[in-house]
Image (tube, rainbow, N blue to C red; front, top):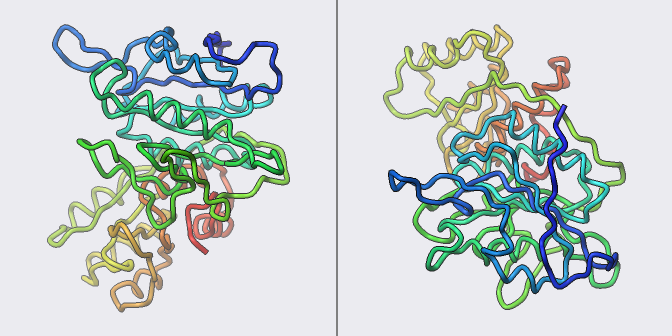
Length: 360
């Protein structure tokens, strides 16, 4: 059971009594956006309770803003599935009271977290926008303020005529694009354009104004929000490379209790046809391991059977991941296997699109 975490009201241009002003909740988890230098000159997460002082631009926004800071701030390299479950529960707890949510998060694993929240928040009807920074707030040339201000604008956005929610899904906003949570991939560590939308167009672009691509945004759900509370952590990623040995493959596929594995293959889903390799996969399948075939390529999709080297995988029962990212694939495995379903239903869910992670 989560403790009641205090909410801090931030000073903005909107009056607290102005019920027409969008009410947004900022969830601060840690990350570069709010880091400070310690005695060893290392960047570490700092408490961000005075966010309005560090970003005076927030006071000009016509929104009612509140801040929730996790009791234990984390560098995103230390994020765990337990943190994803906590975030999902926090959003579920405050869902009825806010019009949108912005999650301040470290960039290293932001794509994983956004994908995980996409699966955990079923029938999401409000924006949940992840953002962060490459340079801490308060530093010269920091991108923190611009990213947060635009993320808040996206979270508050409504259709100009229908006045309904503009982006009812989990997204990642960074630099100048909004990316679906199940399509984001971090591709840059030194430039501000840190994220790419893989195999799917951005949902919005930020220039002088915001331009939304409404046809690419998921529609409002017909059912109420369902917050899932289980993830299966006994999963792994096996990336193929020329010269990979039987010992390496067996060491990963043979992990005791392993339930699922993302197999990163070549091109359109191709893999070695060496007898030992196919035998390793066959034994894993017999043990009940679910293997999801994902391409190492940043674009394109897995088409099992297009080449002989992928037809063998299909014949073994390996599940084709189509154009899913590795980040979405591993979190999808955690989510689906966490449901405790029968094999046939598990395989069906893994192969079909659940949250926009696969292009029909």
